[in-house]
Length: 276
Image (cartoon, rainbow, N blue to C red; front, side, top):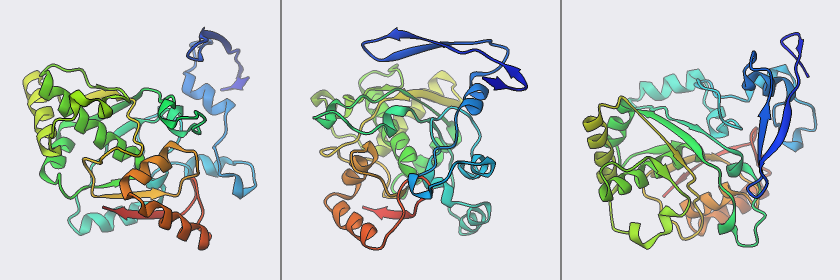
């Protein structure tokens, strides 16, 4: 592979065949993220019927992106331009930014016979204390931009639940936690956020970092956002399962309307505002 005007060799070996984990080795003089940029291409939706070009590397990203790490852009955010964000701010709407390094497990099609067996990968979360304070102030009026943001919010809720049981609990949300009977004690989102704030105050943390495997599918009860901006998702995807939880049975009529009106699906597709 030629990258940065040099030829680089990447070796891939199985680290754990049972879990399908691969280990890469390469000349560490160049970051792995740069190698990926050289080897890969922007994942355009198939209906565009063209190869990705240099312009797509800019367009396939939100105007507020900051950190490398996700396997795909949070595509609901692609609809927000700088001018639109300024208009939203002018109406005294608080905007808060969080980071979730989305993994392949979220976007990989569900192939398991029982969708609950789908393999979700660990994803890293970062959010600062000021953002958490604003979430606490407006906890009952939150609109999530994208399923990525919603999954962060729901993971925060469950971290607060863990802290209710153990004040020093690690911020690590497995995909089973929301469905375990031992965690079904009624806890409000506000209480969960207060628990997190208490933990951060006690440990002098300016930023909260953790990881999540949260998997939201039918039977899950949303705890956080009242609204969700999201693109339209394909069948057999974890994100369509999430939308079906957020809207209940209304998801069927929403998607029938999308198909009838020929809305575009996937990353460069149309958006929707779903309320519950």
